Length: 131
View 1 (cartoon, rainbow, N blue to C red):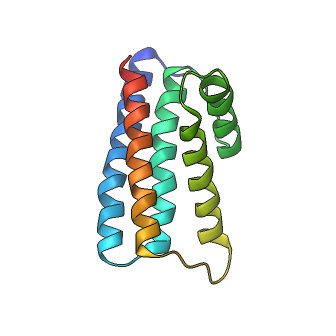
View 2 (spheres, rainbow, N blue to C red):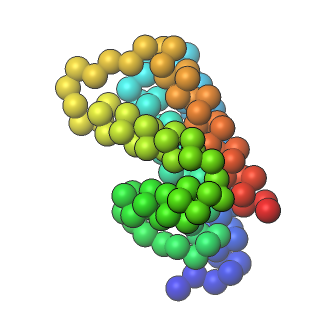
């Protein structure tokens, strides 16, 4: 069981991780490391989502459960525009494809677009956390 102080520190840590990951993705893009960038795009969003879950006292180690919780609590309830659910779902699917499928190729333009969506998603989570 984590204390409120620990929880607040962990929320801040996870959100900082998300923002640090944006910079990492930019670095990977510049080096044309697109498959790794796609992995990090999803994980940046995952870190932000973990911060939101902690704030709401929801804890899980399962990605599917976390995404399901977000969809139930924020998308289905219309607290957040459904585009954020789509962004998260696409990032998760792209990460899974790039990590596990053979010969999956994404263009720089596609990954740059994913980075923009990642930044929008993380920004939205930060906004929710500050409300």
